[in-house]
Image (cartoon, rainbow, N blue to C red; front, side, top):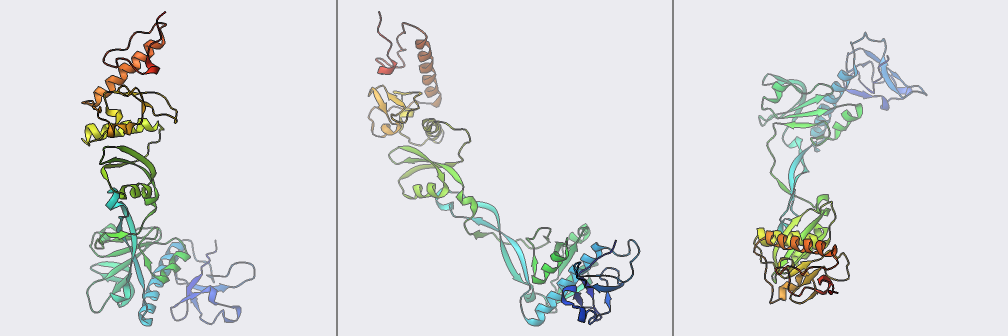
Length: 380
């Protein structure tokens, strides 16, 4: 199988790109040598196939390989690009991932989006002055070693085509940037700098970066359920975006607030309120005034949106659950189990009455006269 490469060494040892050659200048920088095996290469500049370099004579099996070629290419690209940046006094950036937290809703909703990262760009030419390939430091050979004459700090750039960095080298404490390379394009991208956030690249033994505040993220647009209790004791909830919930809370006058996810199983709004109000009153000990807690309420199974699903025994009519905020007859149950027990007895009485021609009177602990819709039919 013919090995086709884009880059070779020219007569001066510098990299030569096949894209820079023309039929007239095909031998201008020659003779050419393979980056992998050092054998002579010739340019192929035909009209049909993509231009490439190939061996003048085919090497023996195993004598030359694409893995070694990509490894050598990436090393020389980093070395030459860094030296060129130093000579031209321009930046050669290193992009690190800095931990960040989005605090957009932290003040109002008490939540922050953690686990995010933002790029932090450092100019390596400010810290190092030279780049060398196959240089030893502390008994370890670096693919590319960035060093400085003015300080002892070094940075090892390790190229990984199919084999990752030696564990002993990683455990040495030396700062190492391990870069995964799969193609010539991956190697050429190193001309523009080093990116620790790129897929296949890992930074080892770097000092942890401080956590910074990140700009608003996509998680801030997610939905949620906000439960509110006002100073009057009225309770309500909002299913919407976090921005909508935060805006509602920002209006003030809130005695209690809780944020949760919207459940996947649909339920009637009054059932949702029933759960939220019960938790706030009996578990969080919030001064909620809701008919859902009152000893005089009957929760109906009416799903109509035209009238409230709560019947008040005292007023003998349907009322919204917030009517308790201004009601002088509001007396809450002592425990949530008392509420559940009353509703269970009501449901049992309704089921029993519906199956009899002559319905019995409702239990005394439910109601005395009872609402019109729950009264037994006249006796014949």
